[in-house]
Image 1 (cartoon, rainbow, N blue to C red):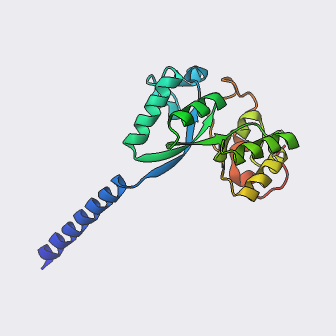
Image 2 (cartoon, rainbow, N blue to C red):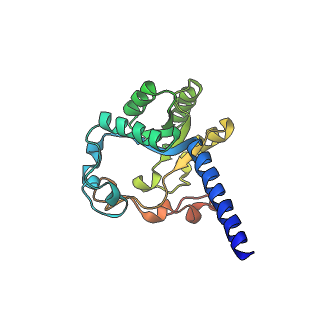
Image 3 (cartoon, one colour):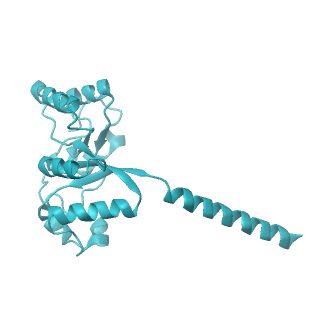
Length: 201
């Protein structure tokens, strides 16, 4: 009796694993965190055998075209049908033009609180240039996630139901040395700012 139950349980588990693997292979994913940037701008970080960089140490793409090819290959490999893409505007536009069905352009400029900036984004949003806001790298500039300068943009996002993405958490090895001297990890902590209407000092 015990052996029969064991065989039945083993058969059940194998069936579940098979069903799960089949459903996973047929499941399309939208990646909300992709970047189109010149790899040369990250040469210092790419040379760091540290933290999240350790996995890719010494294997980074050398130029934007190589990065695009590698990105598409990784998307295909991992069943990623589309990706929210932010970074350098010119590269984002080129990648979207090259693969319009794979990339969703994300607006990731600094918030300046100016009405003309928000009006320009609204016009571009209506024209279909942008599909999302972000990834907003506010902590890299020394700003909290709830910086009041972003409120006009957030109000627009609320009005049009536009998704907004933020950078949270760490910033890689030595962000203060590699181009972001104002970066502070405390500014990347959503619970620290989530319940406040004012900015952190």
